[in-house]
Every structure is written in structure tokens, then in C-alpha cells.
Picture 1 (cartoon, rainbow, N blue to C red):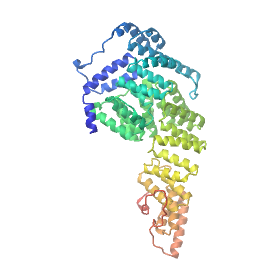
Picture 2 (cartoon, one colour; picture 1 turned 90 degrees about the horizontal axis):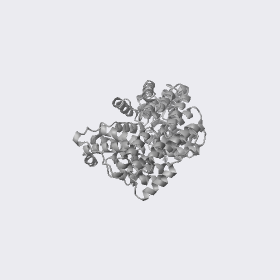
Picture 3 (cartoon, one colour; picture 1 turned 120 degrees about the vertical axis):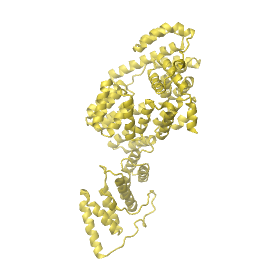
Picture 4 (cartoon, rainbow, N blue to C red; picture 1 turned 60 degrees about the vertical axis):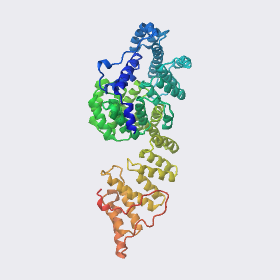
Length: 575
């Protein structure tokens, strides 16, 4: 039913194409280049219109005609980034278009001065109190016009941006929603709104226009809120509705797969994107994160060189080069490139987080904390920054702080085993063993990425002298390690085998104990203990022959949920 509804909504792709062409023209006239680029990419993915179907240019009002010369002159200055000059020649103009460009020029002038002052006077991690001085004046003027109902969709968008910059998120949300209703096809307003939506409840409470562009917004929001299954379904629906050639959708699906750590799928999509759009720089920092995780040095080196040839002073290029140096363990150089990225764009979320990681590698915890805090200021939904803060305070041996930050990361990524394991470790350090057990078991249940949860749970049971539960967990751990088909670096199979051998021996299950002891001999750190246990078993067997009993009959009724399994047949596994 949903698909049918979507198809009817997207049934007239001809009309959507006309709307996109119209909004591209409107955005270009007002200097809204990113919204024009997004709409252009989407329009390019649809079939070309016949000549007689092309939408007509919007008719001029009397005010537009009077302001035409001033607007044309001011727009030429605006395009050359001479914002004060543009605003000077637009002062007194009465048309909606000229008024927007007048206010937008003043806003951008303030932003440019703020950025210049920030770069000149502050280091990359200094907080600074540099503000856009024009914001308060703009708010007063726009507020009067808003009360009088004289703002169009574009000017409402600008008013929302000013309110957000002045840290008035509730008022900004209301204005953005109003602006979207007035002009649903302006993607910039949707994006600004997405930065202010903090959770799914808030998203559901918004009153949004029922327009085809809403599906793009919802898919984007699902990705931001880590609801990846829903996001992928939305994007799949959009592809089936007629946007199969859209590079924007391919890039968003790749980012979604990156967020759920489906690295191979994400890499395949990024490679497809590079084939379709070889000079694209957008999202390439995310692509470099994937190459970094897979330790693909040649591919990351090629990507870095390629982006330097295209545009060496783009934020994404600096992040890619930073990742390249980080992979080569040249952390000072990597941090330098992330700092360069932040000079180009102080609101670059990825660069703040990655710089925090580099400072962690250099053991500079205070700088790492500052970098992660900046990342959270830019986007409170960035689980990597919360997780990074938790790790930093863990190094500083401050478990209460760790617990707070790991909880935040877990709230943002409830099904990520790494957050749960980190939470469990924090609870353990605070002697809250019951909570730690729940976290470790939950981490195993959601699919333990690093294969550490069961091991930690088993060791915790061992410390608490809950031998039956510890044995169960060690057994599951061994099964888990061997079933994944590859030997992990940190795998402590010998620890599990040693414990199980002693456990079976104490429970007079000599066949199983003998098997574990033999397996212990395959590991250097457990060989001597394995041999000693085999000698003990041999001595006992010489004295008395005891048949194997059911291992799990005496298991205690413990609160920790443990899956009951038969004794592990270790013969079938080869370490």
C-alpha cells in the first residue's frame, strides 16, 4: 500500500522536473548555491523535458522592474563575495527578491568577518567568543516584517538561520516549518530544520507539507537519527519511483551503510559513485573513513592524490589527507590537516571528531576532550564524539564521567555492541556488577562486532565465583570465535580453554576436561597448564573411572540470561 501511495505521489515526474527547474532558477537569483546544486543534481537524474514543456520564467512585478538595475548590479558584487557593497546598493529596494538579497548580503558579510577574525586570532581548539555582529540587527528587522506577515519562503529561511545562530532553536524550528510551507521546494530550509531535530518524537510532532520532497527529508532524517533500516527503505522507494540515476541518493545510501558498519556494501556504492561522478568531492571524507577502517593504504593514497588535483583547499580533501597520514601513523601531520579543514570550515563535524582521535593517539587528552566537545556543539547526534569523550575519561581514570558519555553514545546507537561493552566496563569499574552483566549480554545479543562481550561476561562471572555461568559464557565464546572463520588478534581462546578444563575437572567430567587440556597444548601461554591438567586427569583415572554426567544439571538459577547448550565438541574446531 505504501509503495502504491508513493508511486501516485511521484506519478508525474514531468511536473517534478518542471518544479525543480523553476526552483533552481529562484535559488540562483538569490545566491543560494547549495540548494541550487542539490536541485540541479536531482533534475539531471530525470529525463530531459521537451522544448514546449519547459517552465516559463517567473513574471516580473512593478517593484521587480523598478529594482532590476540595482538587483543586477548588487548580484554581480554578491557573486564576487563583496557583500557589504551588494547590501549598500540594495538598501531601499522594495521587491521581495531584492530585500532577501539585501538581508542575506548583510548576514554573509557578518559571517565572513567572524570567520576571518576566528582564523586570525584563535588556535584550532580555542573556544573564542567571536560572533556575527549583524545577527541581532537582522533579527530585529526580520522579526518586525515577520509579525506583519511580509516575509516570503526565502526570507523566512534566512530568519530561521539567524534565530538558530542566536541559539534560539525552538523559535527557529517554528520559522523553518513556516518557511517550508511557504516554499516546499527549497531544500536548504529542510536541511536547516534537520539540524534542529533531536529525536524521532520531535520529528513526528512537526507539521510538514505533504509534498514529494518530504520523502527526501524523512530519508535524510532517518539516516541522521541512526534509523538506517527505515532510511534504506525510503531511498529504495525513491529509486523505484524514478530517481534511480540520482547520485545524491547513491551517496546517501552509501553513508547509511557506513553508519551501520556494512563496510563492503558502502565501499561498492562509493566506487560506483566515483565512476559516475569522478570529480565529486562531496562525501569523499566518508569514503576515506571506510578505506581507513579496511587499512586500504594504496586506495586511500590514490584518493588523496586525486582530490588534491581536483581541489586541495576543500574541507573533504584535507580530511582525506588527514586519514591517509593517520593510517601511516603520522599523527602530528594528520592533526595538522584536520586543523586546516577546520580553518576552512569551523563547523566541519567530521574534522573535529577525527582530530580528537589523533590527539588521543598522541596521548594529548586535554586537546582531545576539547575537539570532541566542539564536535558535539556542531552536532549533538554525533555518537563518535560522545564515545571519544568516554574513552578519553577512561584513560584519565574517571569512571563516572565515562559512564555519562558512554550512556549518551548508547542512546544514539542502541544496537551498537561497542557502546554496550564500554558501558559494561564502566559499570564494572564502579562495582555495579549486575548492570555490567546486562550490558555484556545485550552486546552479545545485538551482534558483538569485536567478539569481546562474552569474554568479559565470563571473566565477571569468574570473579563473582559463579562458575556454572562462567563456563557457559566461555563455551559460547569459543563457539563464537571459531564460527566467525577468522582468528582475531585479541582472541583469548586459551583463557577460555584453561577455565573450562579446570571446571570440567572439578565437576568430574574427565573426558571433556581432557579435551580442553589437549586443546590448551596448541597455545604457547597455556601449554604447561594443559600438560599439568592431563597428568592430573591421568592420575585420577588410574584411581577411579567415573562416567561423564550431564554438565548442565547442577546449573544455578542465576538472573543473568544464559543460553543453555550441550558440552562443546572441540574436536570439530581447529584453532
